[in-house]
Length: 152
Image (tube, rainbow, N blue to C red; front, side):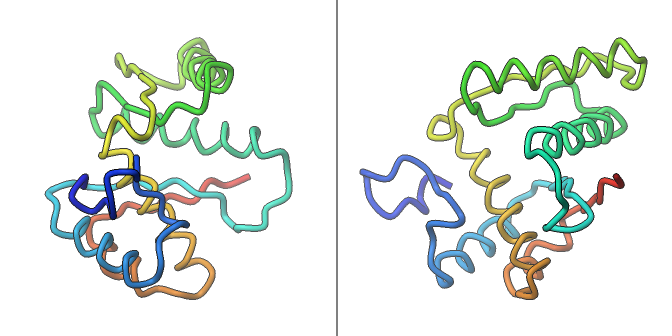
């Protein structure tokens, strides 16, 4: 993934900063990887509500899906200490409520440090485009994507 950086000054790939041609190149690269992708989204891109609540609902579903898949560790892109702590509180809440079995552990890493996080960003970007009517890039990665809609 680092090979897709345009220049040495770029620290990471960010889907929304890429033009159409680069997005296609990124999607084709992702499609060639031996990696499966889990994308958890709200039912509608315009679902009203507080963004952190929406994120928490998606996070709850994503963590449950990862446990079902037998995942023991999830690496999330750090959004800062306060937001990272919120993610840990969500995981702790699910454990207390016995929603999650198993020993799933989450860690946060800065986006520039871990190119695998760029894949998640690109998959989410392609899903967003698909939901807005442009299916081209999503079609390239679709065979490797499990798309889960969170029901309100």
